[in-house]
Length: 402
Image 1 (spheres, rainbow, N blue to C red):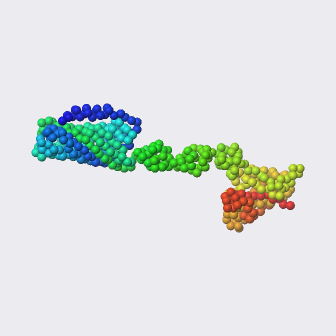
Image 2 (tube, rainbow, N blue to C red):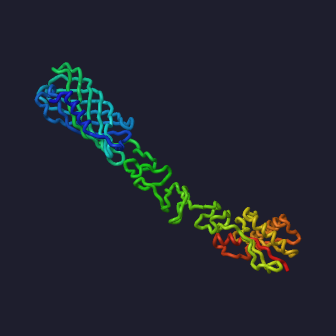
């Protein structure tokens, strides 16, 4: 039978033959497992029967202490056949540490060492319980999301057994085990996919992932879902870090829709500054009032008569034009979209016309030249069934009076 020192040299030899790798298998934070295997008893216990393999059964608990250290405790029982003291039941209880000296992609090599007690019950000899030390080497393999398969060979050395010729017993065990992980499996990037199953282990926080743990990018713009503030960006557009189309002039109209991408025009639909357009331009020789002057760019929010800031430039231009018309009387006509009732819209359009009249007066147009009148929703210039059409219908026109 191999003596304890020989066993130590054998285990040390196995350690030197195994190299380390950069990435370690992920083992459960805590685990509970079953052990099965075979044991070879010390000749001092079983006499000439020491070459026979005896069945072993056990339970094991493990807990991770750090990246390369585990705590363990196990209880192993085995009935041994012998001719020295007869048949014997040997139970070992030990606790100790495992050092992961070689960390592979799917498994780890470990060296175990611990202390415990060995209890021996025999048919014809003395029964005893003695302290023992244990040394072992083995592997732990990943199984599923949070379980592990393991094997280990170990030597147990008891001390102070003066009822037998030697002062202690050395028993050898070869054990196979399966452990069930307790608690949630490791998920280092917090994406909901366990590290073992995660094919994209460094997903940014907040990004949505698929079953493999890889980030999703529904619109293919390079910004992950969950971090993309514009998740429906049309294909092929350049986007910023937030996943939204670029807006070079910062006017709120993205470049791909902006007809004037270098001219900021906040509030406009096409990204271009508003212009005052006369439907019938006056003759160049002698400026005359056109039939109607539509103030493009003077619009209102839904259900509001407050002038928006982008309207001021258009109205300043309109005031200058009215001054060139001499003493022509002007009707300031207000219009609305079809939202709300006819009666309500009539009052709203009147308030809008009065708001424009007041502004023109402040810009120097004589008050006696201006009258305000609301027409409600009666004269639309666009389809009220669309948001763009309703936007155009919320307008003000200047109409010369003959």
